[in-house]
Length: 267
Image 1 (cartoon, helix red, strand yellow):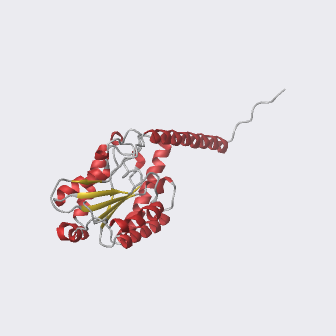
Image 2 (cartoon, one colour):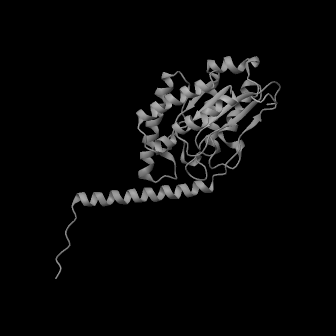
Image 3 (spheres, one colour):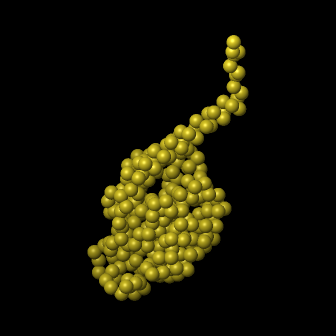
């Protein structure tokens, strides 16, 4: 005869519960990635925005899937175009937009893959929006801070005359596509990354912007990346920060200081 089954110890119950949470979170992340793949429309953002006289100011946008417009179907509703449109209105001149942002990029990726292209572009403004993948990759704040210092220094070396702004990691703690246990942890990680970024930007005297936490209904169709309203709000905050930058006033507001296209052709 078999005896009674042994009563599991509390530590065993906790371990089993933890394993169930990990499995649930892992399956949810895989599902989220499959949904994101279906909504990756690989938008093309490069354009001259604003029908106005005069040479265009050149805006370069660097970063990850958020500024790349992941989940959106229309480039006009994405952050780069929203930003360029608002800058054209504020500066009363056209804005030539170049977007180098790509899905999956972390801070080190932007430094290694996107910044080297700035030298040939000679932009008047450089806006960087990155950090979410550093948070998702569980990089430590001190690592993020060091990487951010290196990124900002590299941008300054590649585009020494450009006005620059760093957009911090958005708080994904409200993203409806993330399950509850994981959502809170991701939110904590995003906020830690943003604090590290803000510290690095302050040391290098680079303007820093951070989008406030967005409500769940403002996310896009993949329930993880921002929807059109979030992109528009981020563009509004970026323009306000850029317009208060003395570097922008020196570089762009005076029409004689706008850099001509690198190829010497029309904007």
